[in-house]
Length: 74
Image (cartoon, rainbow, N blue to C red; front, side, top):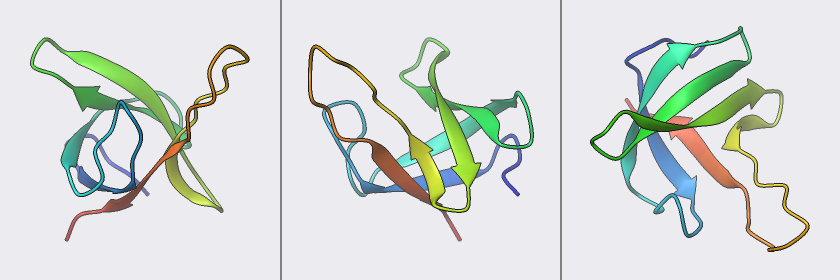
């Protein structure tokens, strides 16, 4: 389970998340939905943790952007 303050390593990036970079888990919304902090001004994206792994999904009809995938840093 992901906890606030955990560090995530991006394993498959996109224009918003760089592969190999580390991100911090922010507020936990539900057991499967939480914030991933980006930037210095408390900016964040919502991420999910489910049977497929940890990801930030990008569902846009205007632009084809790949989902970003993460693993917990050790």
